[in-house]
Amino acid sequence: MARDAERVPQELNPGLWMVPYADLMSNLMILFLALFVTSYARHGAAADKALSQVQAEMARPSDAAAAAKRLTESKLAVELEKAMAGLTLDEMGVRVTRRYIHLTLPAPVLFAEGSDRLSAEGLRALTPLAKLLSGVPNPVLVSGHTDPLPIVGGRHKTNWELSAARAFAVIEFFRAQGLQAGRFRARGYGEFHPAADNATAQGRARNRRIELSLVRDGSS
Image 1 (cartoon, rainbow, N blue to C red):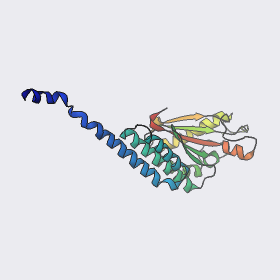
Image 2: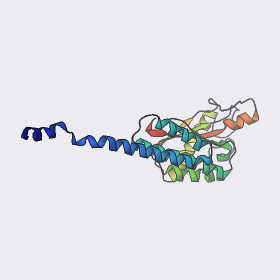
Image 3: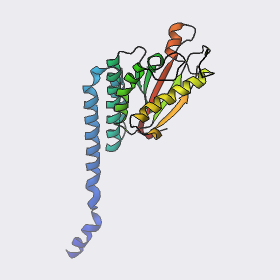
Image 4: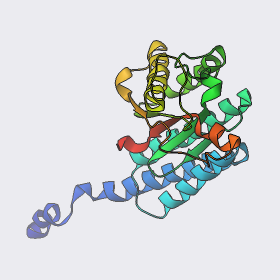
């Protein structure tokens, strides 16, 4: 009898209860995440994309911390789309991928032709974005794009210079709003990454844009 009593502590691992508990917490977090995104499904394409991301997450193991981060990111994508819809901007879009939340802004809204100085309308468009970005710690890539038409006059000699200067101007605005400058990276692509055909005026207008890419899960 004494030998049996001495053997119990060796045969039972008192930490085993944490395994089903951790699984339960992870499953609950994923469930809440799915319910949240489903409730926002009526708000547009960004929410639909976020929902598909959640469904993919539910098909593979995920811990509670990762699920909570995806909840925040999904909510941000929805709020970005709502903020831009309120400004009624043409050629604007929110797109969610595995690594990024992309937001495209038409450059004419932010800058006058050939200028890297934010316009009054541009300030109005970026102000709600600064508030939303302040609620998450993720790094942000700011990319400037132009059409291939040559620059006539002004202080920038090439579209490459202009696109980079515009990206820096957007970052400087966010820094002035209190966001940490170290979160941002500026990229100037000039006319070399078109989103549409430059043979038409409509295509060139789409190519004159600023893209904000929120890096998901701290990936670079």
